[in-house]
Image (cartoon, rainbow over all chains, first blue to last red; front, side):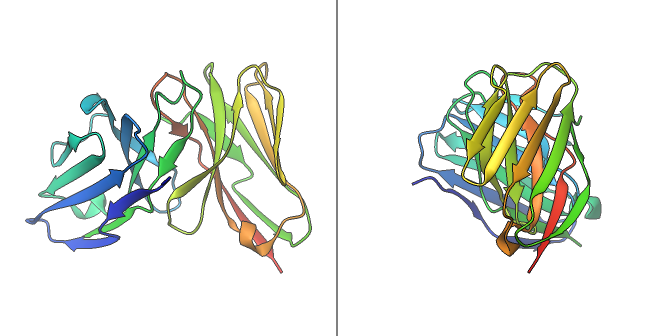
Length: 116
Length: 110
C-alpha cells in the first residue's frame, strides 16, 4: 500500500466553524507533512511531524492546529479561518528525512477547502 | 521561501514532441526531485537525482543536474496528451523538508 489518504476531498466551512482534515498512511513512514497550495502556486510547507512529534512549524497561524495521534494518522484542526485560507491542503509522508535520506515524498490527493 | 525557479512557466507542445523544463535553485542540496501535479490533485513523485549524479533516466524522463550552476532540467520525450500537468522541481535545502519551485504548466495537444 503506497497511498496517502486524505479526507474529506472537499470542505466548505464558515468562519466560525471548527473542522478537521484527516490524513492516513500505512507505509510505516515516520515523517508526515502538511502543505498548503493556492491556485497556480507551488505547495508551501506548514508543518512537519517526525516520529509523532512536531518538528517544524513554518510560522503558521494558531487557527491551524496539527495533531499526530499515532504514526499512521495526521490531523489538521481548523478554527476561525478566514476566506484567504481557502486552498488545497496536501498531506505527505516519507520514509525518513527527505534531504538526508534521499527519499521521496508521497502525497495525498488533498482537501479542497473553501472558507465562506 | 522558494528554493527552485522553473522555466518556462508554461509550455504548449504537440503530441510526439519533446518537452524540456528547467529549474534553478539557490542553496546547496543533497538531492533534487521532480513532481507532477494533475489539475489540482496531489503531487506524484517522478524522479530523484542525488547531488553526486549528473544524469538520470526513468522511462521517457531524463533529468540532468549541474550543481556548479545550481540547475536541473527535466526532459519528457515523445510527449502524450496524458502528460498535460504542472511539473515542479523540489529540493531539500535542509535535511527534513521539501521546498518547491514555481512550476511549469505543460499542455500537450493531440
